[in-house]
Length: 325
Image (cartoon, rainbow, N blue to C red; front, top):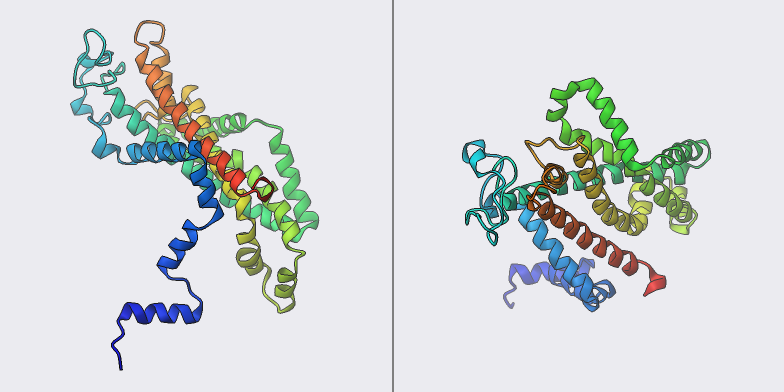
C-alpha cells in the first residue's frame, strides 16, 4: 500500500467533500472577473498601493515615526514652528518641520492618521451593523415595522450628517462636561458618526431584502420551518452584502472627512490626541503668519487618504455592478 502524507489525505477528503483547498481558493480568486478588473485599471492599482502604504504608515506609527508626539518628555517648546528641512533655519531632526508645540509634524501626521482611520473604521462598522439589522427587519417583516423604521430614516435624511454629529456631541458635552468629554471624545465621535450613516445601509438592505424574500430558496426555508432570524442571517444577508461593501468603502472616506471637519470645528479629538482634522485646525491659526506647513501637510495627507479610498470605492461599485461589466 503506497504511503500517503497527511496533506495528500486532507486534500483528498476535501475533494470528495467538495471543500476547496487553500490553493483552490487562491486559484479561484486569481481567476475571478473582479481580480482581472482590478488589474486592468491602473488607477485602481495605484490607489490600492497608496491606500496600503498610508494604512501601514498609520497603524505602524509607533515603529516608523521618527518621534512620539504624545511623549511630553521628548517635546520642547523651543522646537516650536521649525520649518521643513529644505527651508532656512530648519532642523534636520524634523523632516516636515514642527507645530506650535514643538511636535515633529511627520510623526504627528502618522499618529493623527491612525486616529482618523480607527474612528472611521469603528463608525463604519457600527453604522453597518445597525443599518443592516434594521434594513433586514424592515424588508423581511414589512407592514408597520417597515413603516416605522423607514419613517425614522426619512426624518434623519432631512438633517445633514454633520448636524446630527454636532447635536450628539452637544448632548454628550452637557452630560459629561468639558473635562470628561475630552476623555470620551473618541467614543462620542464613533457614536455620532455611526448614527449619522446607518440610514444608507438600512435603505439599501431593505430594498434588496424585499427582492430576496420572494425567491424560491427563502420560500423553501419558510416551508420547512426555519426561524425568520436564521433565514435573514444565513440566507438573505450573504446575498445583499455586495451593495453594502460599496457603501462601507465610500462611507469610510466620508467618515474620515466628517471626523476631520468636527475636529477642525473643535468638537472632535482634543489637541492632546490630535487627528488629522485637529492638526489642520491647529495649523490654521498660523497659516497666514508664515508657518504654512503646520496646516498644509496634514491637509495633503487627509486629501491623499480620502482620494485613494474613494477611488477604491468607485472601482468596487463598478466591479460589483453586472450592468457595467
